[in-house]
Amino acid sequence: MSPAATPAGLDLHRDAFGRLMLRPADGREACAVVPVRAFPLTAPDEGLSLVGPDGHEAAWIERLAALPEGPRALIEAELREREFRPELTRLVAVSSFSTPSTWTVETDRGPFSLVLKGEEDIRRLTDGSLLISDSHGLCLRVPQPRRLDRASRRLLDRFL
Image (cartoon, rainbow, N blue to C red; front, side):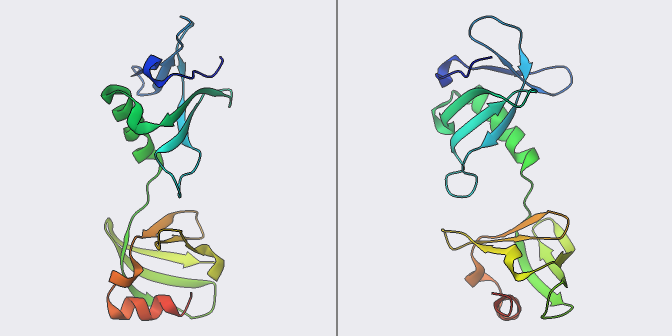
């Protein structure tokens, strides 16, 4: 399947199994695709690839906002399922100020404990937010670290 260049020609739908299916403009049979962001942190809505089951790009989308409502809603729903990132709202306690360290936190999805393997697992993003990865690969977002309560900021600053 060759990559589709025109987002307006995208024929996306879900099949009976809930998979996102792309029907190529040349009339070939539809195939399951997975949306992948090219720049998930710096430009999340620009440069998306629809990757087929063979691992090759089936279509390229320059801007998600340029798609018609139907395909855009399908892709956004698929991305939300794949990119689950709870938001850290409060840092309750840490087991140690050296790593690995177990953190007890509150998130917008409820209380959670994570193991921070190293200080390098806390990444500052260009917009000032933080991304914290735990030992199992789950990422927590801290969109505005300055808006955390004083105790949380004090604990977090020990690791930054």
